[in-house]
Length: 341
Image (cartoon, rainbow, N blue to C red; front, side, top):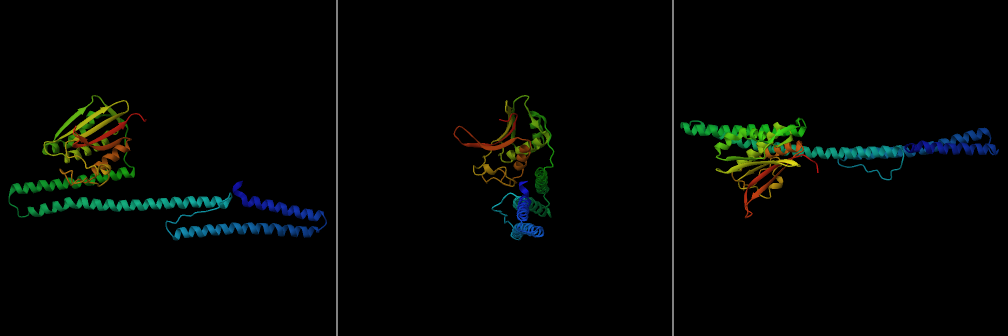
């Protein structure tokens, strides 16, 4: 009823006008016809006055909407709102334009991020493609079989790098689009670690890096085995790439009443402190202090974080230090919570 203020006021003044006409008629001040005419004129004036006020408000709203459309980013601000249909309409339009402004701002941010991602993708793919083109050019006219084999091996490495980058980006885009279906089943941690290391075993052997495990027996968590395996493989790959020859990558896994944790520790040079807050950002490569592989793409850890967080888990990174507070490597810890505290 409060929103129909126009009609309430109109009826109220109409009743007053009729009452005045009746009083004048019963008091013999005016004749019946004159009272009817007076009543009609009063009611007409009342409706006309109130209608003009409503039309003026509607026109003002129209001008505000037009200004908001002409000047992108301008929000509609309606002041002195009162109860009534027009005020209700003003409020709804205000909310709509504010939501549109927010959506427009978010879309602009997304477009900027997309442009940055495309630029990063172009840069990351261009580097191995350039190396691949150079290797193929150098192979032309080469007669030394050993040199040719070395160049072919390097070219294969570049092709694998491109393939891995494209595959990782496709998986990340699926996660961003919400099309990845995650199942929740009991996952054996020992089986998970074995499956995660299996495709990297040859790479570890070629890099002369030792792989060690310290797993608490019979531990498990509720999650998606396949996608968690993908995440852990990316972390192991990252740790291997930043560990020097004769180094060690170790996996520790344990659980308690609150959570199940999987920790990957390497014996590399650690992560620069300035880089730790950004280590999981997409296309972010740590500083040159991580000298074993300075060409890190910065996609694997981002993909790992997205997959872990999508399952309700958490992942963190830090440096490992010895008793002398010297950095002796980096560690990544995955935690799947069992109880919400």
